[in-house]
Image (cartoon, rainbow, N blue to C red; front, side, top):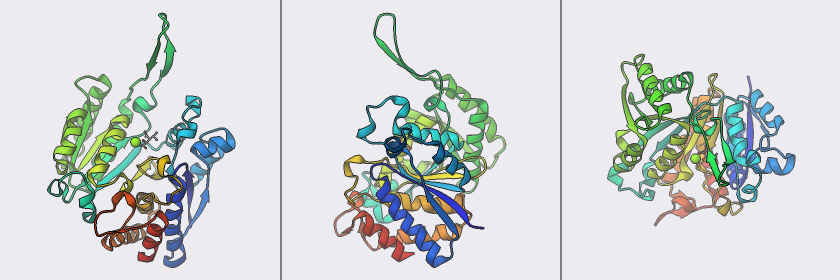
Length: 357
Ligand code: IPM
Ligand code: MG
């Protein structure tokens, strides 16, 4: 049966990189028998401009009907000064919450061809393969109360709330242990249990869930130490499971171990396996429209989508092999180019991947 994919290009470099990912999808449909249909929707700044809302109801409804969502990126300086609840990022948070995509998988894998692009020494990152499992629909990103209020003395005070229910911790912990069983059977749970009660509970619940996974070794680490260890000796990690905000920060950090944030895909899954797939980099407004952005993170996100939500693992392998091939052939976008390599544009990179399929 044909599957449906909702495509949300978004803002900044979003439309350019998504165009390249769509080329790859169309090539699989036309030449390799993949059966999927696609539809486009509005989100983020463009949705604000055209409908007044960063997540129009129609987009959420389309997302609910589709088997998977492919997203580019949202946000940009144009919308930075509008009312908080109407900013592009709120559209992204609202679709994550609206589709209950609580499990965010962010792999940081070193492509050996790109070892030179990392700021760390090759011997520290050789063979790096970490999976960050970030809780995505709870924690301080969604906790109430939140806001900016004026105090009696006239000054303003900003406040947010870090909350986690046992059930929210338990379900993300299970995802981490389940994926660890398919990898090196090591989970590192990252918290700040020495200071924050919400993550004291986090640590307790994760430990409890680990009883069901006797083969997986569990370690706990404070987030400050984890940031340090990720730069000192990243290969000590297999699966990292952490809260929404810590995962946001650590996944950007982990991405640079691999040379470029332009290479890293992500999957955000709900309990039923529906997923939204997006590169972890943002909308990069400074380079938007110049045809220089790296489309590979989005293209690799398509591979994740085929594997996790569309039950097409062979097609996912095909994309990943094609990306590897293109890198082996020496093609590089500006963010990963080095001496002796061939610098290509966004669209040339997409075309090269299609040719390699
Ligand atoms: C990410 C981004 C988002 C987040 C922003 C754009 C709201 O940084 O996906 O990591 O903080 O989750
Ligand atoms: Mg982020």
